[in-house]
Image 1 (cartoon, helix red, strand yellow):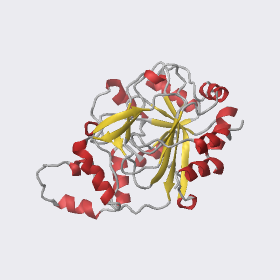
Image 2 (cartoon, one colour):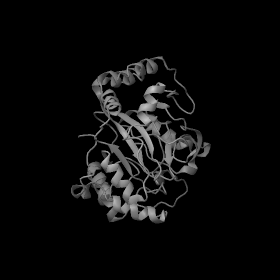
Image 3 (cartoon, one colour):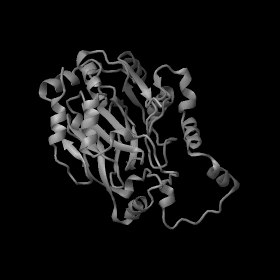
Length: 326
């Protein structure tokens, strides 16, 4: 099957500026393709009796857990949390969720295999990069079909500076998907927190961070099935997700992809707590001093280990330990 007509839709689409510069295209796939995609066995999974059987179904259809922002990679840790769905978590102080994301690693049906080939093709990558005037020799791609389980949450964030472009296509297989509570929010900072965006604009060597939900106003949600949103992250591209739905019947499903810069010049990453005005100044302790000396990559490994991340991946064959292949 050919998906070349999607390139024409991207090329012809006009930019929208509300709440930030982006492309929004409804009815992205034609009707025949949408029906074939959403009814494919990898997308429209059978209903599960419980979380344990859901993971069995996902794994048997070629999905693997990925290390993804806002998520854990230990399925038992997730299952234990989901039984009570409490607010205790180790993901981020800006979140209440405890997410799990899985990516389709082994497409089997013809339509999904053809779609995967198209998404990783030079033609698709070139079309989205040209639309946003991104130099192809400066970036590398990452894409896939993903399912996000109940509790998945990423609080409002503009994306880190290394991300050059992101796109999301809703391909939910359930008829009531548009009314469920599992869609991407597109947001603005409230007036009293605009100084955070000003800081990001004035300090390009400092990375951008997640912020609390109550610092922002939602301007729109990407509810429409078969819709695509594409944008190049900047200081105002705030978006977030907080899911609360029954994933045993069907799961939030997207075509998700990014272009990543080969290099990033950001050297530090302030957290949202650093932007709180009026906090008492804390005297630096010996531990704080040691933390400041730890390289950024080492900090990432420590954070991942603390949340049950990469240091626990070797024993679970159903986890993709490095989805970017780097």
